[in-house]
Length: 204
Image (cartoon, rainbow, N blue to C red; front, side, top):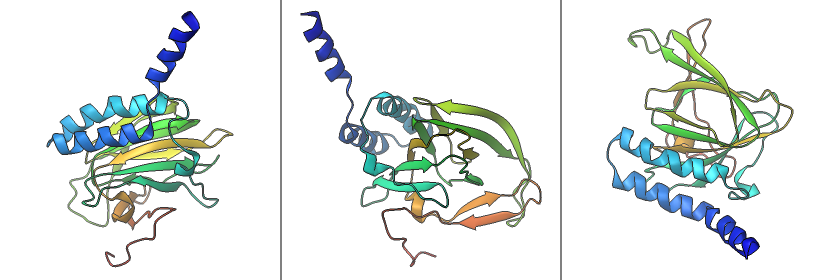
């Protein structure tokens, strides 16, 4: 009897990717403010990345040359995008922004994340001053929440691949974003694209 009850408990705790997508869609369309959206998305993502085998392996397509982003879900109106991210050992991102809200959960492995803030007035489109405000190693189940102005850098300093699930408030793979050089102050521009979807070249 106890074994049957335990099995039912495990089954009830399973949270499928489709259930997660449905919940994300409901939250994004049900709330208008960034703070409300992030407040309600965080527990959903925490539940997903803490559920064993909830995300299929095809959602995490690695690249040898750099951090990889696989598009998992995006509605036709591009109200949000859900991404599978992969870092091989030693891979890193530049210091960068998203130009939208972002919420990121570690699914497997460990990610070192540094958070930054701009200390200049933003008047020069080519230069910026960024200051690191924190750094931590995020392990499985950890969820980071970033508002529209969030800036961070993520890398994998472990010996195993790091996998994470990301939600953004726009088509992040076809968004021209900014990278920041902390030494020279130079602002770079990049479009990340997706591993499994052709880039929309008509936008840039």
